Amino acid sequence: MRLSGLQKQILGLYRECIRECRKKPQASRSHFQTFARNEFNKNIGIDKKDFAAIEFLLRKGRRQLETYASLWVKDIRV
Image (cartoon, rainbow, N blue to C red; front, top):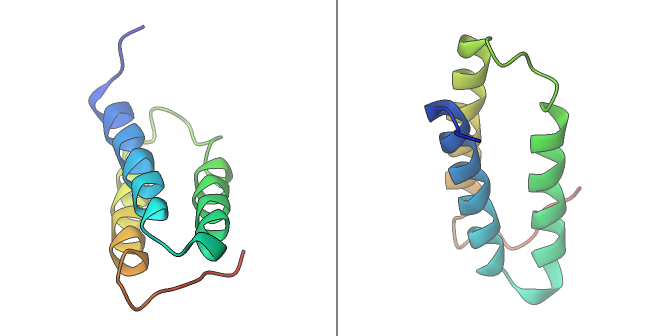
């Protein structure tokens, strides 16, 4: 099955999130992974053709990833 450009971007963002989780302290790593998984699962039901919403969520996800990837963020509450 071939993926569209947006689908590839979404999978890429998810992979980036999981990679960043590995850089966090061992005690809080699972919190970051759970948060990332929950954020993606919340929006799993969005219509594939709602490009505006998908692009908005991609931008929002990248901003969140940038914030949570900062060294000063040590833990996240789920």
